[in-house]
Image (cartoon, rainbow, N blue to C red; front, side, top):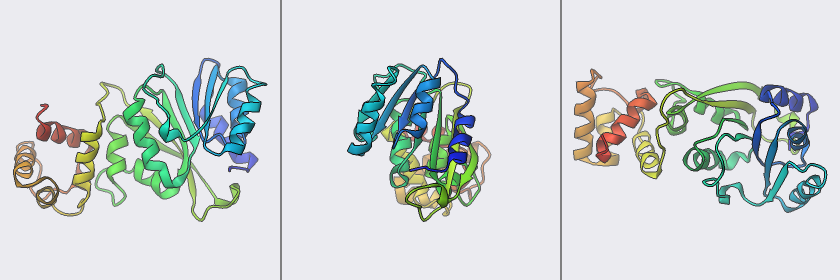
Length: 251
């Protein structure tokens, strides 16, 4: 739980809330930020897994009629039917950061933006550009349709109980242009090419996708002017998506 008042105020300032905003809050906790969202935004859906904390959200609902509290696991919520344009905010469990982000990208692509408090090293991976040692599966997945900014870092002393790691507050905003659909097929493809990301792509693809698909991808990259020694960690998210379409036959 985030307890440092200065950090909470800094988060709120960076959210830049407007009266017409609608929020999905992941992990509302004791409601420190939920209250502020309810007072300043149009509508708030607040999910909390912990039953005792969730009961506090139900009590807040008696004060704020623009609050919809949900006691339950965010990963089990159905986001598909929600109207587009919600802003997503959360101080999320670090152990399930990737599943939460993947759920948002696949089930609710119509979000306005995403603000999350997450583990610092994961934040750095998400924001990492290609050809960087921290560039990863998650970097490519998020970077396909978004820009990621690390707004500031948060020391363990700002939380109760204190985590053993540094934290970061990040902003994910949509890139202009057509949204490229992220489905399980694309996720599996990205995972497969990053499984051996420091090997030459030709060799890593043979191991993960088989000889035939590896040949198709390498020939395509050579035609585009890439070196045959290129590695997965050097590929821009846009190129990875092109390769996925090529291998899946959707070009």
